[in-house]
Image (tube, rainbow, N blue to C red; front, side):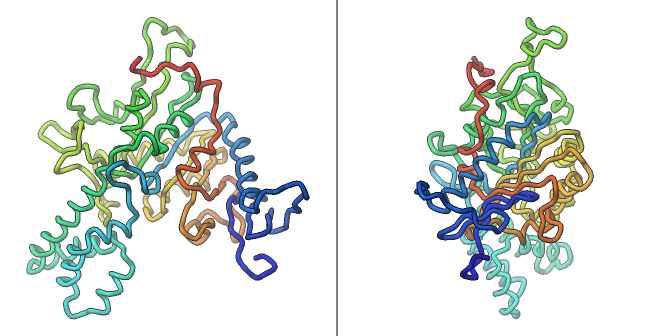
Length: 398
């Protein structure tokens, strides 16, 4: 709180170092940082400079393993012909189908129906729909028609085309993968159905190890995650030049618009399919996480966070998926060399402590957790570039 009784806007929270500001002043650990006379910057600009200092020092540490969890926030407002949306945005697009579902479920319970509509929680609604479909045959056929229409709308709204001039995805890949080629590959896990990261990889000339074969169409097998790409003529024991640069691992934890289940197994198409293999927002996604290929993705995520000297960067994630959050919390609480950075953004212009309460001990953030307030785009722009390994690198396609 400032001296006016207003809550400060928190922009960085670390153990022993919280940076916040209000309209006039900068605070460190809730203590005002005096402003020198020559400094003409606003309190927000000063706070962002403090955050940049943290970025420059922290992300240049020699983490052996770098893991990314990218969720809906990385697609929000990105795309050329249409842009990624929030859950509330998807709710508005599917309102006709949603009203149909609510009328069937709560025809004579207008108060309950209105409460569901006010919350705009697609996941809770679809969870209830699926449950009723299983136990009420009379309503099942009607519900299925509206549910499938809502799922179609979700699919269509997630078919995004990368805006190469505005979207930060390629720049993010360029910066996060700028490491020695002999070091472990960056692992990018995402809950997004869209293919913005795949499109950015193609634009940047990256090779993506995503669990699919290098045939066409690609077929899924978990063993492909254990493969790497080297230049055979250079391959010698401990010769890092044999490892090809611009390679990363991609794990799509909730499926993809380009995945399809066929008689050949799970295959990957070039373009989006009409019946993609994805986990829709509903409570049964936790059950789905124990089926292939989702089980493979979750297992790899858990394995990745159990290794020594691992950095996990979480960006655009709302922490509503308990099965994913539990894996993260296990690493925070049990892996002594694990570090977690949460990139948090919301319309309140301050870090959402309530949504992230599991990562605090009382009022103090856990020892190995850092939380920053940033959009995906601003975080990408602020992420320090490693020029030693980002320049003069050949792409996999060159």
